[in-house]
Image (cartoon, rainbow, N blue to C red; front, side, top):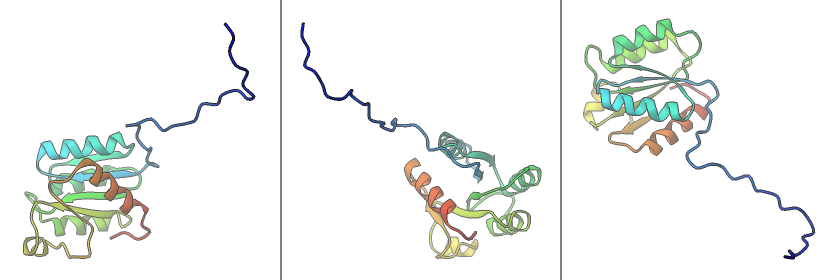
Length: 149
């Protein structure tokens, strides 16, 4: 059997593996969502992307978790309507403890309900339901911006 001579050895091209996460640079994200299944889904999606995730079912639990957190909290993803504490009160507590933290609001509500709960039109917002890819894109976008909101 004869094979044709090749001038240079074949070089394998480096192709990214599908589904392999882009590693986050030590970013810690706090997820606050009272619906356990949604909270677990968001947590899993973010962890699969390499983020450190703290999860809480309400604002009180979340603030307690922030007090115990050693290190920086890069982003807080919070539901707008939560039990035990208004999201606006919760975010005031977050900014008192972690002024560096950016905030991404999420909700199935819109318009006046959002404004009544402290969410203004210029604030980062993710309407429910959303796809995991949309969540990842929004998180990356917020983490790349310079100023906390």
